[in-house]
Image (cartoon, rainbow, N blue to C red; front, side, top):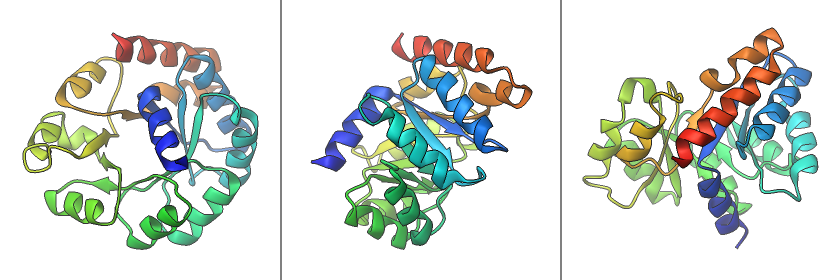
Amino acid sequence: MKRLEILRDMQQAGIIAVVRSETTQEALKTVHAIVAGGVKGIELTFTVPGAESVIRSLSSEYRSTDTVIGAGTVLDAHTARIAILAGAEFIVSPSFDADVAKISNLYQVPYIPGIFTSTEVQTALEAGVDIVKLFPGSIAGPDAIREIHGPFPYVSIMPSGGINSKNLNEWKSAGALLVGVGGSLSAPAKEGDFAEVEKNAKELVQCWQS
């Protein structure tokens, strides 16, 4: 039940903001701006210093809301378990890892591994994965989703990489269940312009809902 509820909340969010920051404070302020802008899915990457504490703080703050907090750039089962115990509701990796799939299944947390080929899609599905991440999306392009849905019409796909408000609907039309958006959303945070981050989030939500 827990896993199904998380998957439902992720699908309703539609947009998963990929947050990479150089400091803990920047990460927290970026997430707050993104959520204020209406994006309800957050992937806090483990490239962020003190990622575990950031996830714990965000999970506590947004627990009673419809915002979903997950962990990204998870490369091994040890990191996945740390993230899950800190409160991460889903796990994202740049590639598939069987041990991460197992630990995520154990805790009934959705695991979203990066894929680029049909072989990788099949491997992920056989391991019980609910959603695969088409990565890097900037190289694959929206047509890749249509091609994958040929032999795997039932697979749920989240493209990530190179997605912005200008091409968002193209990805959605191609069959993306949800999308991962990083630099085009949060880049202003590097200059401390969190108001612009919030503005970007509002624009993305408007595009997705249209």
